[in-house]
Length: 243
Image 1 (tube, rainbow, N blue to C red):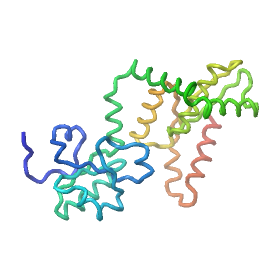
Image 2 (image 1 turned 90 degrees about the vertical axis):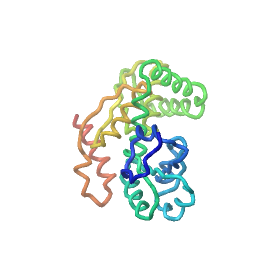
Image 3 (image 1 turned 180 degrees about the vertical axis):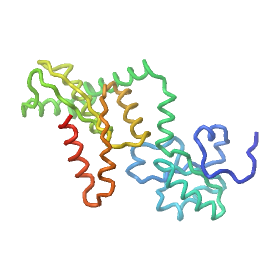
Image 4 (image 1 turned 30 degrees about the horizontal axis):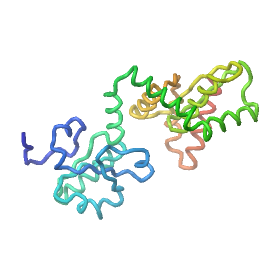
């Protein structure tokens, strides 16, 4: 069925996009280089938001354009601007985060998750043993950081560093000479529903049994202009110590 040549809503969902002739569209990631390096929607090209005015028309040619940012807010504003310039431009509802959540929800649970977790653990033991695990274990032993029957809290922000640290501790516990206990804590300072869901899904995929604490710290530092990240970190530690 051909698309109606009428003015379409500015936003388009990923589900709606599946029913369109994708050869007639160009998908553009408007996030910055740092975000793009972590991943893009397959088939998209990267044009940072600050370069859209100079580059979008040439990149699109005679195709319709679908822009996406992190959550679909900035790309909606950009799409409205280019609509005013006469281009047929849409914004992907929910942005990259929405697409990622949609992808996670479609993945089959159970065996696939366990298989992925085992692949990660195997890579730590084999491929990255020398550059990661051996150095991690050496530092633990050299500085005498763990004693028998210690209870260790591994705090997870949801980023790659803390997730990797959690897997390294799991591997250490599996092969250590004496027993110790591990708990994996996520401090939710007021994450959006999408961000929290990504953390939960990644932890499940990597077989990390997290416990989440609610704190709403973001509300307390929202109006702080001078070093809000430092204050947020201090408040997170204070909340953890008090619980």
